[in-house]
Length: 61
Image (cartoon, rainbow, N blue to C red):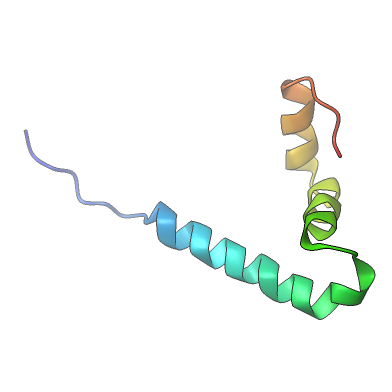
């Protein structure tokens, strides 16, 4: 069996996404009491996140 060469680094992608969120939070820090509040607000902006919450039967925070 041969090993497939990876074309996508999910760890690197996650790191970049987290850095982008942290950078945006820093620029909008005065709008939110905490990073958690910021993440909940970002999730509320996303139709994809709303679909995921709906699919799992949960209420979006």
